[in-house]
Amino acid sequence: MAEFTLFQNGERVTEPLTEGDLGARLADPGMADWLDLPAPDPALIDRIGEALGLHELAVEDAGDERQRPKLDRYDSHLFLTVHRVVLDEQDDLLVSELAVFVTPHALVTVHKDTNLHPTDVARRWAAAGRERGIAYLLYALLDAVVDSHFDAAQALEDEVEELEDLLFAEPAQLHTVQRRSLRLRKNLLRLSRVAAPMREVLLGLMHRDIGLIDERLMPYYQDVYDHVLRVTEWVEGMRELASGVRETQLALQGNRLNVVMKKVTSWAAIIAVPTAITSYFGQNLPYPGYGDHAGLIGSYVAILGSSVVLYLLFRRRGWL
Image 1 (cartoon, helix red, strand yellow):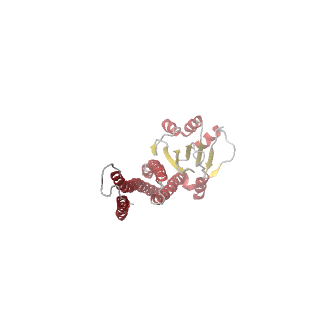
Image 2 (cartoon, rainbow, N blue to C red):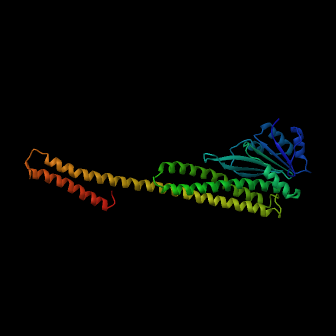
Image 3 (cartoon, one colour):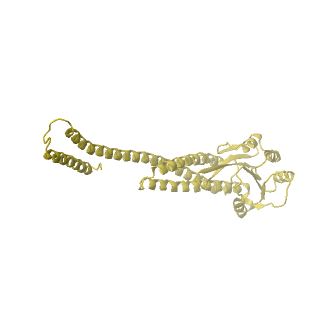
């Protein structure tokens, strides 16, 4: 027996039902039903599709987890694909696909993510009253999906701020910044791919030709649409900040490399002068002070004096 959860007018149906009874209840136009199918059997989806008269292309898309957020309109129902997101313990963005069938008296959700719990959405539906119907249930479901986008965006913004602090931390943590910034950019790209198309989905649902949303519910869907716009703009802004973090990191690496090269060059110059002096005095040729203690003292003075002068000069210029 496949696993499923059935709600009628916001209340969960706890009595045991066979798949045949389930199809009969969903086909009853006198009840508002929500059927949630976590990790369902494809055969069960086909039977539900037959009971509700769902289009075969929509049924096929419900079993395929490679759909982009979209809204398809058929003669007797609507088919939506949306994505909820969550950050795991490793701060990787996990995306789970949710297929939604919408008929005038029933809503069917199909997903393979068993962590999606419909109870909270059903509670909002029950509290709204029976007269709100399937349209309000769909609003509550979409609002929960967009809220997951919003929560993920908030967490990613915190990550951006932490990376900005790490850039100028001492000692430098460039390797950590590089690893986390690459993961951040990947998460932002994933979030952008599932959040941005939601604008088209909401606009399609609010179109008057659809006939799903009445004037009382229009402000609710408009509120979800505003949240979608905010998340989309938020993500685009963070993607620019993430690119700025990467560019700043490269600039800091270049600056640190220049500082290292200055120090290496300065010390090489300091070492080169004494080497030149000792090499000169080490020749088997007469030179000023050759064979005399004064020549030895003079070489020492030249070595120490030139080294100190070069050190002070480089130090003054900030190379050391």
